[in-house]
Length: 257
Ligand SMILES: Nc1ncnc2c1ncn2[C@@H]1O[C@H](COP(=O)(O)OP(=O)(O)OP(=O)(O)O)[C@@H](O)[C@H]1O
Ligand SMILES: [Mg+2]
Image (cartoon, rainbow, N blue to C red; front, side, top):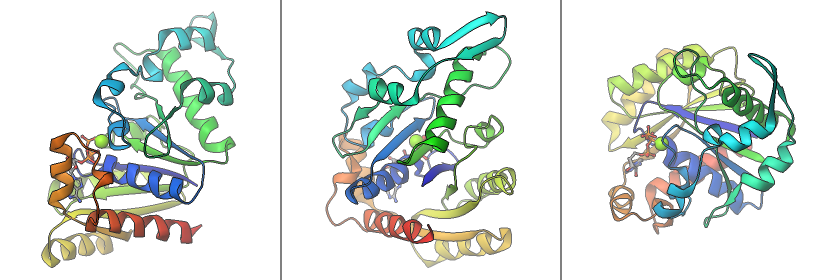
């Protein structure tokens, strides 16, 4: 099961990606959580300290790894030589809440400042991780639509598009849907930060209009926002309606497979 979580900035991608990764880890599945955001913070939600997070070098910025694994014979031609197992063994971090975490960093777009060897390595790693391994992979994507054009979510079997009820995030959800349709087998909309039937109905109407299934509705939960302010993982909050909804989402995704 390979799941990518996308959506506009701040809609709750990281919370949902981390919540799902923990749900599957709790089911005794081997889970790799991939942080593919250029400002990585999935680890904090999975219980790592901010200090620990600051020490992590995303793979896309790890010059030593990149030099070691990409041999350049001709300018612009990279011979990749790595075993995904080795990279996982050396670079995956066990998080306090269970899932293994790989901080990938983002695949940059071509052009100014492009680190092509890094891109090549990260894209290949992602592809191997997603296609060749049996773990549950949950990938927390960079906000917006641009990364889809770079093929970061290629090969996943499920794309979750998280949105709140605002027009702006629904429009981003529309753009993501249009880019991903036909390329990713399952695409589902997830409504997050929902405070009442008016907002839930708005997202529901939008999903019908776009002809994309609304797989989950996650309520707004002040305790989640408060935990983030305290620097505590929001996933450790007891009796949270939002976390219960994410657990239900995990069950529903399992049933779809
Ligand atoms: N259902 C919810 N109820 C209350 N707060 C929420 C909920 N979902 C997310 N939040 C809060 O909203 C903020 C943004 O969430 P999160 O970091 O998961 O979004 P994101 O889409 O990953 O953002 P970014 O685009 O910056 O990576 C966080 O403080 C998070 O705790
Ligand atoms: Mg995030």
